[in-house]
Image 1 (cartoon, helix red, strand yellow):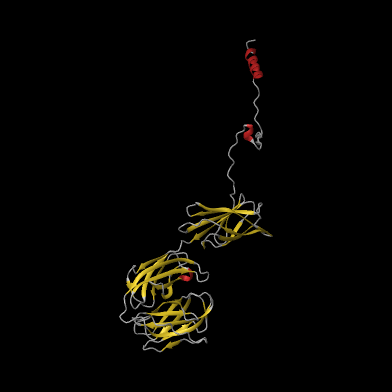
Image 2: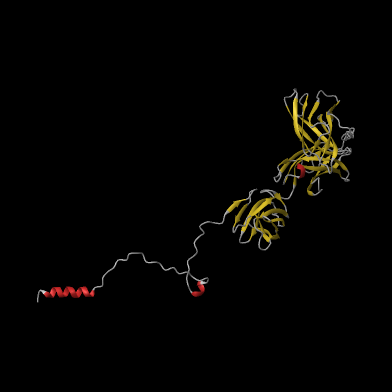
Length: 401
């Protein structure tokens, strides 16, 4: 009996313990999909993960950048990136899909990101999507500078372009100082806030009675959209009794006549012991095209024009090249351009390259202002220290504006 007790205890323990089983497969996980409005049901949801693939970004020809979605892409075709514009600016382009509203929106910001314009414009459906020609109005930055124009199909695509607004034109004289006593020619120097129309300013000289004493051009050095500088000679009829004169320098568009800026300088002219004046304009040669000819004057210097040839069509400005038999004492030649009525429409200086006392060559740009196509007379000459013409070459050309 004592031998059966341990066996009975073992059997009783086995009956109370449940067998342990090892699963043969991973249990399936339960996935709960929240309804469209889980917050309304008091269900907390985790933030959505970031998109594995962001919206594509494209570089548009001309440098504009676009972000597209749902197959929509907006392309700006004109103007080119960096173009100098004003308000309104016309922007053309296309979209791969016609916007649902039939319109695109726009926003204009300055270099600091401040909004200076905004609105919308219609698109025109096409077989390839839609096109647009938009006149965009904005408040131009007072001092010019960069602006950014963004065009969007809200929620579907955006594109942007960087443009430039030129600063307001201003003409600043650096010399001579107001009230200075001058003669003819006088040299003026100064600068402009931006490069002027046609690359030149125009000047007029008046006496105290507002009678015009002279006029001409002031060539400006610089690049479009950037400030410019000028150093120019101003010629006018001297006042026998002397007195005050006023030099007006203007930036005027020769095509439209629009005046961007005007500045005046008041100086004085001394009385002349022997009344003199600037020589009268050279008479207009025959309308028959002439070959380049040298005017016979007491001088050993001879001027030969190599280009352009007589009767050529030229635009403003146009290049000129030629030769001289000897380098002029001043190291430069003077040019004047006259229209068919003999009025001076351009003048300036051309540097001569060479060694003193030796033959040399010259190359320069000739500027002029005309309102319409016309015959012009180009005269390139050598002057003495007093400004009197000693030798010149003359050619007749066809100016096209």
